[in-house]
Length: 86
Image 1 (tube, rainbow, N blue to C red):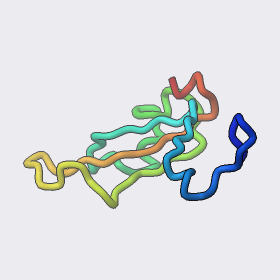
Image 2: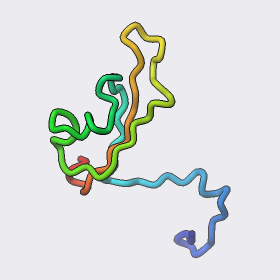
Image 3: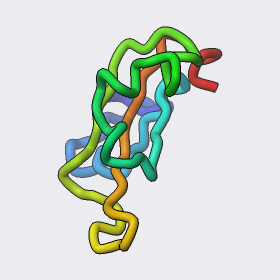
Image 4: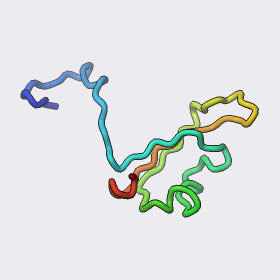
């Protein structure tokens, strides 16, 4: 991957690169009962904002697993356009 100066970066230098996708939304604090792709696609949740192309729910690392209210989860939601994501 060339940089603006034309120099190529090696793989170890790419670990610090952050890619910005304007159509990607990161959500935290999702309750366990709605932390499913099919549920989040519904018009009651994130489907109301536009056409979703991809959802990834992260249940491997819950937030506050020992909280009295229970754990919460995160999700990456990719919309078809930047406008829908905003």
